[in-house]
Image (cartoon, rainbow, N blue to C red; front, side):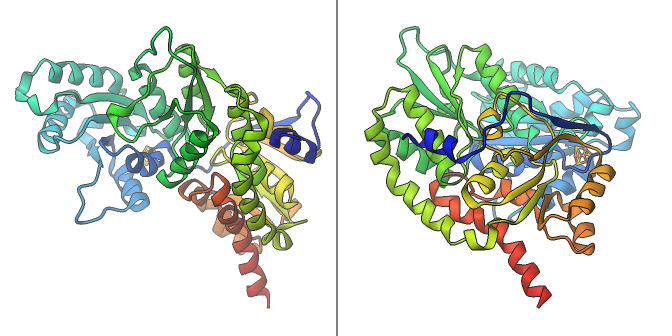
Length: 438
Ligand code: SF4
């Protein structure tokens, strides 16, 4: 039995008529600027210039921290009140800021102009600004020879429309048109899509190499020059479930998605690798040989957490968009009982494999009406509620154990060797609750 079949066999399949509770009310989520925290670490010659307010600058500094010895690769160009009143020429000021930045930091190869709530309120068109500044620098005007080869792109990280992981989706979407077209006779290639910590990315690349899949690209690439080519012979595998727009842009370039559950836990990772292997015609015995050691390590690591987690009821409030695959992992690999699984947006196609494996009767909600949702949490009283920072303290005060969902995005949690750490993130708050009760 292949890993994918094994995973399917452990789950209760749903029929095609998935019932989803849709809510459109007040939301409690971080904005897309948060993604800069992990994106700037990944793309080592990129710089993120937020065009925003002091609030945006504070959010970034407190979320990402700034080391005093290192030159940070993100900053905020602050829009002052007089700019908001339309009294200053924001475009001229932005040009000056970018010129100064590129003159001081010749190592920058990709500059992202990142929009925010204030820049959207005053309708500052950063896409046009990126084109204008990029063209001017390429022409060598303004004495900007140091910026040769700098790619200037723009996306929005505003909190008006987004939840925090959409910042990465918007960022990667801007990179897709920059990818070269693959040669017409190019062999089949694999594109792994989504930001992963380097250590996890390297583990996956090693496994693909051992499987015999050698033509592998990664989006985002660590360096601007390593951006892979794309085209009809590209098969892409999502590593993160919040990349709907990036996926659409890749498909517009001809790439084809490999359908798979997301690589969380022993079985989820095995099924994800197995889907790639099937696409590339890898022999099933060879696949099982390659993944068996990692899968066994992951299973052993998970077994340690089963006593603490099995039978415990868990609710996810909509925040990171990782909720559905994580609920699948906890239910099928650790025996937890998902009560409600909320997600800001439900991409049915990308999440189909994980949705199908959720236990029958799991309440799935999309969007948020925070007061109503909190009422449901109070009525359900799950053992653990995964939610944003702003909701965790009030719920703890009501005697409910919580887990910050943002920690799941900041921590290495994908793949075989992180399966135990992922389980630990859910076991720890339950342990703390038990200790406090004694
Ligand atoms: S982008 Fe909007 S929500 Fe995010 S920090 Fe700036 S003002 Fe706040």
